Amino acid sequence: MKTLPGKLARTAGVLGLSVAALTAVSASPAAASTSATAGCTKYYKFDNIQVQVDNCSDGWVWIYTGGGTYFKGTVHVTDDFGHDRGELTADRGKANATKYFPQVGTIRICGTKYLGWAPPRPWWTDCANEIRV
Image 1: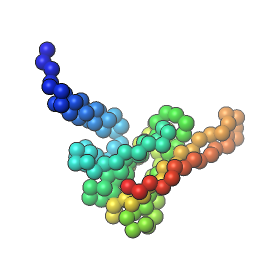
Image 2: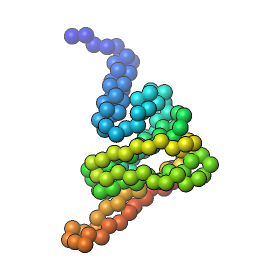
Image 3: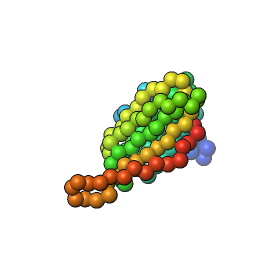
């Protein structure tokens, strides 16, 4: 069995994990694989909500809400000029992506959770601080 030398083995391992992470969720933006290798994609996490922002050319934003505290994830987007570009949402177990023009300036990640089990189920939204991308 052949083994790779130290640095090469680590590089191959990181590359393998990166490819696995990108292919794990099918709704990632089409440009994610090329931008990730170029170092343009930034990753953020708020409990069970994952967000990726790619500012290589235009601004791609991708959101995924996994199993956990929140049943719905939302990312609020502003552009480089401070203009509100709206929200992108994903229910638990789902992903969503969209392209913004011009580039993304800031994001704010929010999660919505239920406060009880009996109907009517009251809900609550928690938000992270605004993040400069």
